Structure formats: structure tokens, C-alpha cells
Length: 386
Figure 1 (tube, rainbow, N blue to C red):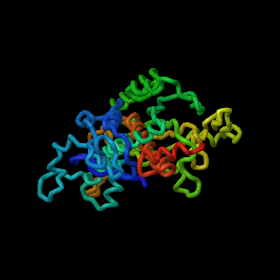
Figure 2: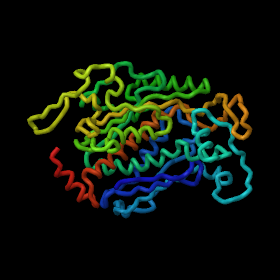
Figure 3: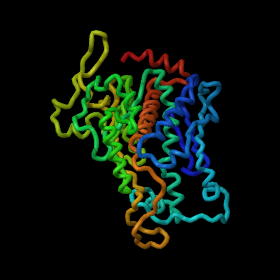
Figure 4: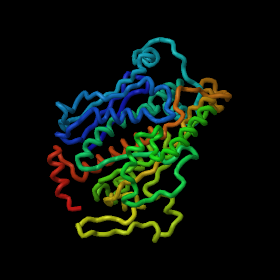
């Protein structure tokens, strides 16, 4: 069984990840993981924290001489900002002075977290609910990518919209909807958008929000290519790959919505305009004329690219804070607390979305073709007739 856990606070010493269930014999390159971590830190609109951290993953167990052992893998990412927080975030008991955080920020986990766990200092909530935790997931996803790559599965993401700026023509959901150079253009864009003109407009929109002390949300798309037929199941509600992807994407901080394929647009059409016509070619391969289903039918992958859209709300921490309540006094206040923050995280959220897609597909691939070693798993995969 594949599973993983993450631990660590935003300003603690490090983030720690434990990954269990990957087969033995998988070649692992830490540079691939580090490259994804750098991509997560990039994107126009990111805040000052990204100038401090230089995220790299360190293996502590489960990998020897560049190959997995089949035992649990432990990775660690150092928090360089820890040196500025050692006293206030120390695990040791003591009377060191630090200012408790009591001004609740609307839209964050501050209020619900404090109520749930009985905290009087919201710092106890902020440290774990922070999006800093997603660096750990990107590291796990970078590890999973290397297994998926063995089986010809590649995952990409790109930004479709920042606030009210984005593509105006309807998306084409066909198997060949992605041009040859799209992903190179995405990675060259400051907002991870393939369209150069839209990139400039998105940057201008983010800059306008920054000048107003405000923030921007948006929409990103994650696409997985080379996914085999048969991952997931309709046999139980929680085995549907669509349900698992939904949970994975909704777990990304600030996510407020997800669509697979045409998503809600399908509700405005009749069935004859939505469902994908299936064909069986002379090469004995299955294919669909369109991909409105986004690669999933009945909770099972159908061999087409897996397409997911994710809607991200604006970051709640505002340079011009909203009115709120002071937790300590219970008094209404004119302004909530301002923590160092980003203006827009949509480009970075897309990288996290790739990681979550990789994690979900790794789990499903291991369920379908699993083995204790990569050789055993590869034999199972090669014997699959679809």
C-alpha cells in the first residue's frame, strides 16, 4: 500500500516526509525533486519568504546509492528562516518572550483552528496551516514522478486565468489539444501561462492588486499524459479516481473548486454534445474523438489525457487587512493581522497540483500493477492487454 505523511511547521527547523510503498529498485535523482521545489517557489506575485528559502530535499532513509530499497523513505527540507524563529518556535519549555498572535485573519484557518484546538495564540494554527507545508508534498510528488516516468506518464500544469484575466475562447478537449511547444512556453512564463500576451496582462493584474494592497486568485490546469486504461474503480465510492483526484486537489490550500474535463460546462449541453465517441483502430488501440470526460469514465481512466481544472481563491492575508475580532479580548477590531505573504500563488499552486496528481496516480498505478520490486511491477504492466 502506498502512503505518505508530512510533518513540520512553517518556521520550524524543517519539513519531514515519510513515503511508504514504493517498489525496490527505482532509480531516484534528487535533482528532479529539487527542480520541482524551485518551480514551486517561482511565479510572479510570490512573497518575501521565497527570497529566504532555497528548498532542497535530503534523503535520510529508504534510498541507497541512488535506488529505492522498498523500505520507508524519509526526506527532509530545511527551513532556512528557522534561525530567525528559534526562540519563539522552540520545542523546549520556557518563559522566552514572544508576542502571541490574537488578531484573526478572515479567510484563514485562524478562527476555526483556534476554536477546534483551544489555542489562545493563533501562531499555533498558522505554523501548520501555512502553505509552506506544500513544499513537502511537492517533494513527495517529485519522487512519484520518477516512478511514473518509467511507465511513460508525464504531468504538466499551466495557468488559465489570474483574477478576471484569462483565456476567452473555450478550451478544446481533444486528445491533440496541446501544441508541441506549450510546456516550454509555460515554464518560460513568469506566471506559467503559455500565451505571451496573456502573461503580460496577468502580470499587470497582479501588480495592480499589489498596489491596492490586495490579492489575486485564478485557475490552473493539470494534465497527465500516457495514463493507461484501468486505473481506479467504480466498485466503491472512494476508489473512483475522480473522487481521489477531487480530494487531492481540494487539499491544496486556497482551492475552492475543481473540474474534470469540461466540468460544469457539460451541464449546459445535451448528451450528444458531451460524451466522447470511442473508436478502435487498425493498430488495435482504443481512442476517443474528443476528451470531454477529461480521461475518466465511471471513476476509471480511459486512456486519454487526464485533465483537471482547479480554482484558487485570493490569498486571505491582505496588506490592507479586513476588519475582524481579537481572540484574546473578544472585541471587534478595525484591522486583522498582516503576516508576510504573497499577492498571487496560482502559478505555484499549479506545481503543487502536479505533485498531487503524481501522488494519486502513483497510488492507483501501484494498486493495478503493484510488486515489491520495479522489475516485478514492470512485468505486470507489460502483461496488461489495454
